[in-house]
Length: 73
Image (tube, rainbow, N blue to C red; front, side, top):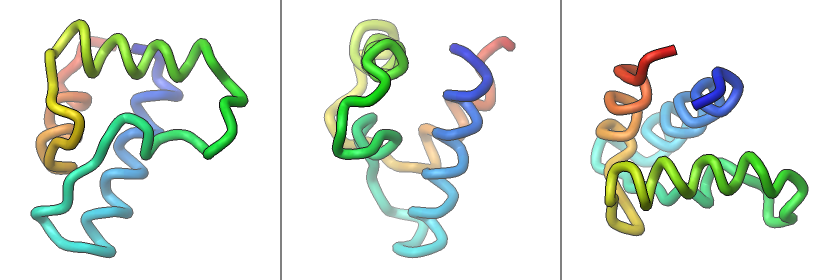
């Protein structure tokens, strides 16, 4: 996973946790604008989320931060 995507995921998850608490769930769509302005990055996130880790549509933001943080650079 490219570092810009990793940083974006952590930033969005931390913001969601700050707004809604530790139990908040996120989807990989949360990391993108409503417009599909970067399809390659969207597919990278979707591949990591769905194919690599077989995650549900919504997962706890804290879990995603832990997973992304433990990914090799």
